[in-house]
Amino acid sequence: MVQLNQLLGALKEKEVCGSQDIEIKKIAYDSKEVKRNSLFVAIPGFRTDGHRFINEALLKGARAVVTEKKIPLGEGVTGIRVPDTRKALALLADRFYHHPSGKIRLIGITGTNGKTTTSHLIEAILTADKRGCGLLGTIAHKIGSKTIPAQITTPESLDLQSLLSQLVEKKIKYAVMEVTSHSLQLSRIENVHFSIAVFTNLSIDHLDFHQTIENYLEAKTRLFTRLAKRAFAVINIDDPKSNYLRKRIPCSILTYGIEKKADVRARRIDLSLEGSSFKVKTPGGELDIDLFLPGEHNIYNALAAIGVSFLLKIPPAAIKKGLERIRNIPGRFERIDEGQDFWVIVDYAHTDDALEKVLSTCRELTKGRVILVFGCGGDRDRSKRPLMGETAARHSNYTIITNDNPRSEESLSIISSIEVGMKRGGGRYTIILDRKEAIRKAIEEAGSGDIVLIAGKGHETAQTIGTQVLPFDDREVARKILKEQEIS
Image (cartoon, rainbow, N blue to C red; front, side):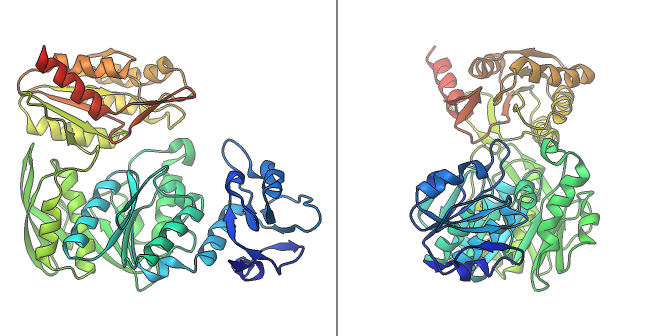
């Protein structure tokens, strides 16, 4: 419980109408979550406006309301008007939970691809060194022994501060979290203090939200420009956008890469479908790593994790142990093995760059064919659909275009955009809207030594078609089909 006047000290710009001498037991931005003596923050959303639910919040017992609009609230209710309620929510939440990010070593990872794998690798290394570590990301949020399903990659500011507060309560000293461009643009990490920030890479994605690649890059850059001078940035020097980023960073930088001279650099790389082995040069000496995650892109993820570990002064033996302990990341080049004589891989790749990297890995690691199953999500960035189609055409032997999560869009409209790129790339393809049947067709097509790549949904366990959210897991579907094949 906190006094309202103490909370409002976090806001520089505000107009207050009513008493500030109120005990606040809870902050809420969803009217359904309001209880007696709550502070309700009305956020303008993408589908609805929180200002429309103020009356519902008041009926449930809200004593104070933060708004962007001038709204009469009635007797006994304190109104606080601010320029930006999203930013206000973040600042209020940080104060309500007593600034938890300042009490742990928080590592933030941003970039188009690789955030999830890199975060899991860092967690594994910290665990190998017997340092408690929380994990906040796409697949789930982990607080000690508790695992919380993730609704979105980077939680809304209030939920994020609550999770960070739980880490502090559990006396967990380290946490690694994925930081999305949406969260940076929408002020979710306002007043969140990072000890280390990691940049993995940047390619086209989320242009439905950011409009241009320049805006997208600028959103990512915000994670780094807000770093304190005592913090560190870990940057993929091989990515073309790293030069722009490095000029904007106010603290010490550690670079990693394969192609360019970097502080942490891999060499003597040996790739296989089982994983990779390589030697790593670091400022503290060399390491020999056997990584059980296939593909060059996963070497980059491992290098980022090694860079972070070096800054945290983790011993080389623990770094090696942590990296080599990981056998798979859910939905990230995850192998589905039911004894068949070909490979079935499920991967989250949902951008043209990610798809190209995964397909290139497949082509490099097999002499057989690469059979691809993929689609594109509805109500999301349309510009990448033909790009993904062209990538599929150029790097797979045969593609089955299917539904991903069409959401409110017509499936055939999405697929027609993919087809533009497929035709441009000259690829062989067919269309099967039913994703289960598309996976079945790919598996039936596969012969000895081939790779079936099922891309786009990765770890997801549901498919959104229209307003329906239906159970669907690429991994379980593929496993069931493979077992049926074995029986028949």
